[in-house]
Length: 288
Image 1 (cartoon, helix red, strand yellow):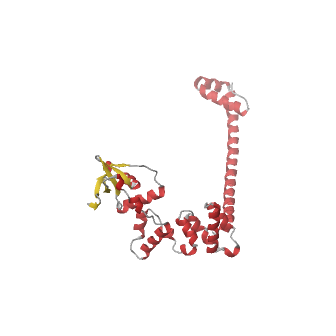
Image 2 (spheres, rainbow, N blue to C red):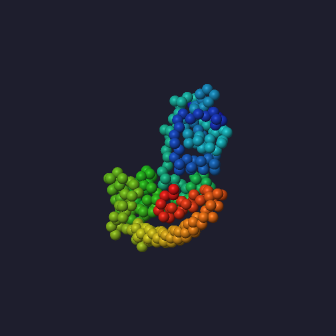
Image 3 (cartoon, helix red, strand yellow):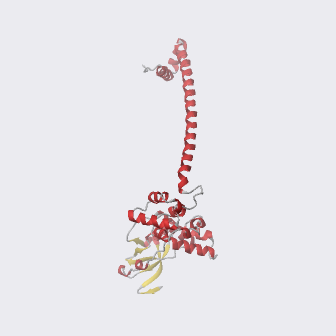
């Protein structure tokens, strides 16, 4: 099918496509892309141009990788007449994570798609938990913007920022921008410094100011369990040592019996050497 300007749409055998450039696949994005192609097929065609009996891949390397992994025979492609005709990336406008979440939420609310369908296509488990409908209402616009720009993680926004009032959230973002540090540790340190009147949900057990005490409780429990295990193995070691000493006494008596020693040397010389090593080890000497 001719798209104009000499661009044609055709299904091309995957084995005839050669990537112009290769790059590492980001784990999360690649997993989502694979789930989408498995669920609904390849929607956005690859961009290629012919060179001999092959086709050079200009756009869609990750899609190409996924199709290879899924053992597809043919893939839909836009065939450009020349390499210079490629202008696809100039029109790319990626949506932000917040916009993506709003679109998914709207689809679920209006009943357009089932939750399972969206989760499978996007490779996201428990999508309603991930969305957290009321989260955006509790975040300052500057925090949402930092999240969109991938400066702040979803965990920091959902688990930490919501414990301080929006005006202090804005102060935190300004401080992080000033210091050029958007790390999780820096964000949590600023949250812990929040004045009392700017804190929220202080009574909840999971708030940032109680986590230290909970971690100490958990550490105390682990130390107590470790102590119990230590006492158990100490007692086991003592029993093993007692049994070994009793065994050594028995072996020494056995080897001091001339008739038994002569029989053992004649028929079991290797065992005799082992018995001698045990006896000398208990006496702190070296076997001859």
